[in-house]
Image (cartoon, rainbow, N blue to C red):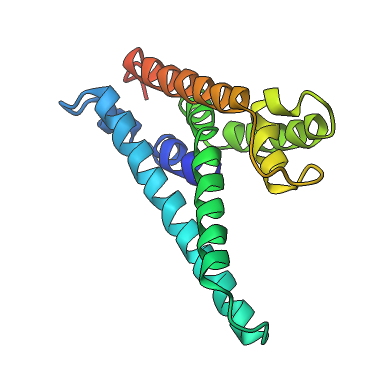
Length: 176
């Protein structure tokens, strides 16, 4: 949420959104480029996290990690990264809709709490903000895999957020 809020929201705070919206560039391409940059940051931070965890394990003397376990840890971390990214377009929509960064951060905190509340119920596989905590174990015992319906919920949530952000910017005025 912080990454997407910064990429989409700071341009309003800095007053450069009027210049971006006046560029001879399709707004849908602008949204795609911003999501691409955001995903690159997500991936870079995840790879850094994986390397850091392996390094800290070595420094603490936990011994060498078998290759298969290291690969499984890395793959699971990258899966969680991709699943978390499916929630990002809604934050971007909130950022462009509010024209700043406080509303999307408030939204992120609120949905984090919703994820924790729904994560403790049987509704967790159907609540987009509870699916990732359900998979990682942050909302109870970790699951080895998700229900297929959970992936559908996240895909729909990704598409709705992406389309909402794109349509909002397509209709945006340059009044700033």
